[in-house]
Amino acid sequence: MKKTLQIFRYELGSALRRPSFVFFAFGVPLIAAIGFGVFTLVKRNQSPKSETEGVQEEQSLNTEGFVDNSGLIAAIPSDLPQKILVPYQTEAEAKTALGEGDIEAYYLIPEDFLDIGDVFYIHPEANPLSEKGQFWVMRWALYVNLLDSDMQIASDIWNPGNYNRRNLSLEAAGSSSSAGDCTTPGYTCESNALIQLLPIGIMAIIYISIITGGSYLLRLVSSEKDSRVMELLLLSASPNQLLNGKVISYCLLGFFQVLAWLGAVFAILRIGGTTLNIPPGFEFPISLLVWGLVFFVLGYGIYASMMAGAGALTPKLSQYTSVYFIVSIPLMISYVFSLILAMRPHSPLAVGLSLFPLSAPVMMITRLTVGGVPFWQPILAAGLSLILVVIIIRAVARMFRAQILLSGQPFSLARYIKTLAKSQ
Image 1: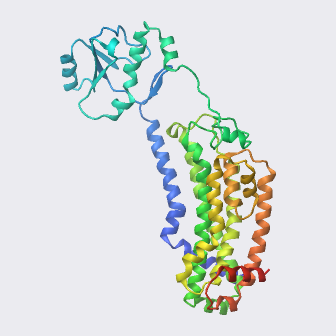
Image 2: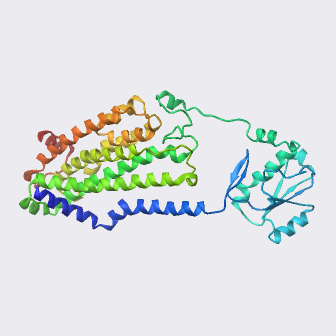
């Protein structure tokens, strides 16, 4: 136990002394959360929004002019901010005001507007706000005046109905969430792309953390074996002590890495509000943080142990890439299926993959992020994964023997499976 702790402390300190690891694991999520918090605070302290009832909102509006040669606009709608549209008798007057900076641009409504429907927008330079974000002001003014200043009818024509969508794929999958529901993450929220893609994002954090932690352990064992450092280590510690110390240290580091990333996501969503256009009533479940950490630990225990065992059979560091790819195939396939089934999280295939230990770490997290998962399913998946972790760690620990670690035979999948099976 003492030597296991020594190896644990050494590997932990070695990892924390690598600036690249510390920055990616903890620096990036911390900077993202702080940066977004500062941006949100600055944005909230800006001038309040100008609102048009029944039409839309704009954060800031420029003062613009118009020349109405058609005589259509008798009055500016009362719900528009004052002096947002300044009338001019001639285009020459509007050009002068534009040149002096009194207005940002002006509209020219020709005499035959009612016949041809053309309106000309004159501005001194490209202005994305004026061209794309503010033309609705003149459009609204035309609507109201065309309808004899009846703003209710104009509003009804502007928004002729409330459109509700139904996602048949979600209904067929038996999703408990109604279409358009934005109170939880998932594809039922059709009005916010961030909330739609959140299940994939959370799953990607778990996947990347498992795969990078396991690959580093594989590379470490392969490197120590290739450089013959492993021979020196075996003089002072048993193979079991080496394996336990390495796996536990990097599992702990990965645990805090996942905690930092999920915590950053949670913080950004909590403070995002109007900045991210988060719909009212949306909640990021705290239980998702807990389950994310649980399935990371279980997934790491499975794949890191498998990669450590593969490292014990890899005589040359040059074989690292091919060995890593072979061992991580189950997790990669699970990742691909999670992307495909993210829109059908409650289909039989998705449920089956979320319970299967080799795919549960990513598929179950995807389903839990969407919601609607019966409480017994993650418990069952965690239990089955824990059983597999115990089996694999015991097998790899037996495989971590001196005659295998010091063997010079090339790595092969058949030899790896055979050795793993014999170690049961």
